[in-house]
Length: 80
Image (cartoon, rainbow, N blue to C red; front, side, top):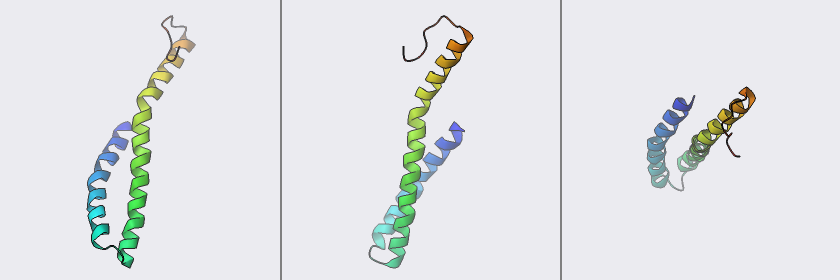
């Protein structure tokens, strides 16, 4: 799952750049407005995939600590 999110995030970047150039070159027309809406969806995709990639290491560390605590592992859990 993480690999897929990283791959999507990477491939959104060049598409976003091409779309940005297209929006700037068609500014003020109906096509430009449509492309701008698509660009807004790409920004949302960037934000969500970036947030997932940012939070994931902390989430994994927290889950690992939870599992260790449930198994009775004497090592300290995450966040304590």
